[in-house]
Length: 200
Ligand SMILES: [Zn+2]
Image 1 (cartoon, rainbow, N blue to C red):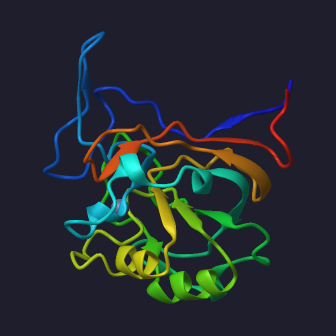
Image 2 (image 1 turned 30 degrees about the vertical axis):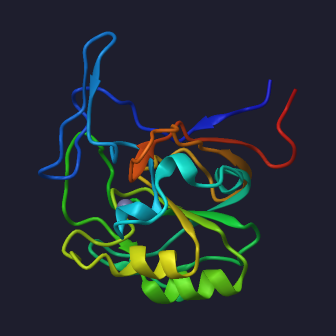
């Protein structure tokens, strides 16, 4: 059996959502929640009214060759190209910052990504980024600078991943969003499979 690394935090009434958003609540068969809970994908509509909604995003970007990279960034910082250890070797890159250690405690001092990194990654052919914090922008950035930079370059984004068990290296990512009409995002079940074709 191939070793699969589950990079989704558990969704329960203990998981924290962004302050002010609807808390996650599941009563056996009924769910109430912010769609930006736990491991989730942002659709372009998250940034701009009229942008593509999650039911219409292409799915291929959420599955395929993927690299986990450690990022030497401090709390409240933004990952820049010079924080990375090693070369970009896949079109999907997940950044392990370790700055949001417990999804059941919302700490505001997590790190994000820099707009320069978005620009740099796009030149390297990257089509999706992911991060182990609630947002690719630090908490204080209400302008969503990096979300917008990623959007300009057509780079999809996954947030809220749990990457503590994912050793930096190459994998195959599977992280499909739900097909929710008109929504600006969706939880995903994100998992890393060994690099190469998916096992039988
Ligand atoms: Zn976001």
